[in-house]
Structures are given as C-alpha cells and as structure tokens.
Length: 241
Image (cartoon, rainbow, N blue to C red; front, side, top):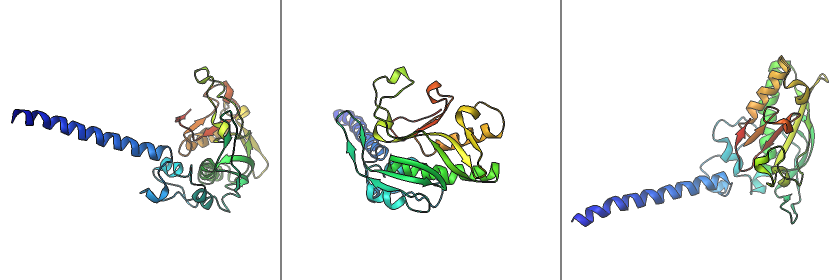
C-alpha cells in the first residue's frame, strides 16, 4: 500500500513532464512554421485587414507553404510573383521567395524576399505606415527607400554574432532607409531619426509598429551599423530596438 502511494506522485510528475514536452513541441511547431495551415486552429492571415491577434504564428505558417503564401500576396496590395529557389554550398540562397515593385501603394524594387517576409512587409506598409502618413501628413507614402534584401554574408555590427549568417543570406530580411511622400518630400533615417519634430516622430512610430510583424526590427538606436536604415527580418531571434 505504501509503495503504491509512493509511485502515485511519480506517475503524476511523469504525466506532467510528457504534457510539457508535448506543449513545447506544439509551440515549437508553430514557431518554426512546421505545422500546416490545415492543422492550425488559427485563420489564415489576410492583407485586407489589420490582424488583431497572434500575428506571429499566422505568419510563420507561410514559411514552407508557397501555395498559401502566394494566394495571400495579391493585387492591389502587392504585385508579387514567385522567384525560383536557389541555394549555394555556403549556407546562402533562398526558397519560397518572391519579387515585387510595389507594396501597400508604395513603389519599391525587391528581388528576392521570402514570401513570409513579403506578407509581413505588406501588412506593415498598408495597415501601419500608410494610415500614419495620412494622419500626420495628410498624404500617403509613394516610395520606400530600399537598401536590399539578399546578401550572402554574416551578421555585421555585433561581435557576439561573429561568423553567424545574417537573415539577408537567406533573403529573409529587408533594409528600409526612408520614405517619399506624394508631394515629393523624402525623410530618411540617416538625416531625420535624431532630429526633433514630426519627421522623427513618424520614423519612430513606424519602427514601433513594425515590431508587430517582424521578429527583429532594428533601427539607428541599436548600433552604428543601422544608423541609416531599419533592418526587418523573421528569423529565429526576437528583438525590437
């Protein structure tokens, strides 16, 4: 009787441990986009509206689902078209990527960028940048300053990550340097981020709102390497600085 009583807590602990392992596996599956949309309790993200909850897992599910992702990336939100997969032998290249020339009503020349990132960028421009531009300036952004997506290189500007491949090496990142408005006026991070006034406020607010869609959203306050651009990616890390 006493032995049975002693075994009972162990069985409970074992069940709790297995439940914890299962929970971690499920969360990890959503985190890495390994669980297909058909098995997800969440509805697919739509470009027609600003997502109100659990944005990250709804974007992650697009990582390996090119068919679903391309079905979401439609006009008039973005003129995306697929780019053939390409990988090299040095951990560089891309899969499930697209190219496009306008997003959320703003011109930009991008090739390649992962489909997941393209959806995140579209949501940010259309549902965060443009509404804020209309509110603060009474006009929309017509062009985004782009400093590139794909680059076969390691992370720069941080000695702690020396030798680690950048998300740019898999076309899973984009750098944005500024915004041009309908009246022709342009504001840039290099010139306007540290100034006082409306332009600086606009830049800081669109950066803050980017953290809703990108796992990493870095600006000039992060380090000198980002003095002239926002870096956005949807890699394994998560920080908004």
